[in-house]
Length: 526
Ligand code: FUL
Picture 1 (tube, rainbow, N blue to C red):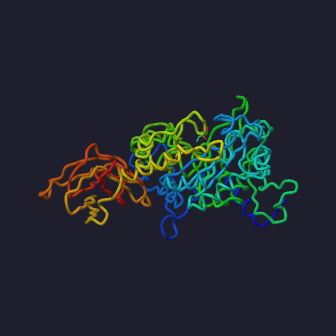
Picture 2 (cartoon, rainbow, N blue to C red):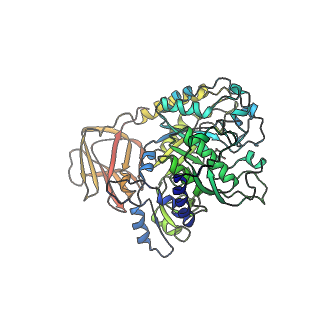
Picture 3 (cartoon, protein in one colour):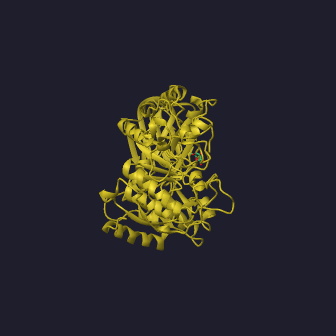
């Protein structure tokens, strides 16, 4: 048992969180601008707020530095790998024989090369899926790689994954499932234990960390909540730095009279302390699930959305998760009686390259056309794409998938080969809300890429893209496209190429002044 000064300090913070658990996410943002005061990452709202007040508040919400860094990743990868890879299941039972995990030729460098060549900037491994089987030798479970004969129980997929990703300049993310069938069978998950202060790490007999005075924390948790804390501690202190922690919200498959109420506040607190740069995704305050598993964002995707408290310091959509509109003025009004905050909570679009999340021999990867469509409807709609590519029983990404990733990247390069506006004469007129680009001579354009400077929030509510007819000045403008939202990234495909020398983006409606960070013009070569 470690009673250190640090433990005392964290315990004091813990008390504050327990007293006001909903303030946790707001307590953590990193300053975006210079200067002392941090712009708000979320703002309280109430049923009494007028529509004007709601939109003013929405215009004041800003992303944290962590969220800005995450948004720039654009394309991230998921790797679902575990006992399911060998049993053929999608949701395991928790009583698998650990010996079923037998990758015959694990090569995480092969994963990393394929992901790097595919343009992925971060990869998230299922360190633990709902079955509870853990891909590193955890001190807190027998359901892990250490219990089987694979590599004589000495193997560590997480170590190998993290090393390979970093060697290839890919950031490391971890999926750690709150639902845990194995811990249910062990009488830990949903055992009815009360939340009480727990010391983390909880040292086990013969613990190799005992002599080293490990940094320790006291946080409120159930028995299972403490189990999660101990595993998070192992992952974040022994495999870091970690850039994304991905939490699913599912409950285990347990009898209806049982429930495990997740200790989100304590888990978040530990992650912020041990991995301050990590975004906490989906059941976390930094990144939201887009609302489907097809990788598709809404046509108008807002990063400022109404959210409601969802217990133990967690948040959830105030409107239905799959509502078609989460952030327009109308949506803010509709949500105001259910919501407690407007929060910067940007969308992540998860989808698998194959029908299943885990590898199954009889399934095939999506076509380049399907993937391209997903890219336009995720990265092109103010979201980050999270594409799952499941390793097979060899422990390799299947050849067909590796080839598909390469073709996909090549295709996106052909969709937007060269920004014709780069280096062109560009004039920003803030008073008129326009950005005008003179290409020097008439050019054919069929793809347009827009971005707001999100450090100033998401403000644009309607804009037109116009071209000036050759030889004309003044009012000779013709509209070729319009958008309602832009945010961090909006990519438009015109139905047919348009030839013009002078192009203009004109903001016709916004919350506050819009700062355009990108107005790119492309001619696809598909
Ligand atoms: C879901 C899980 O139930 C799936 O197995 C998968 O991990 C997906 C990404 O999240 O909620």
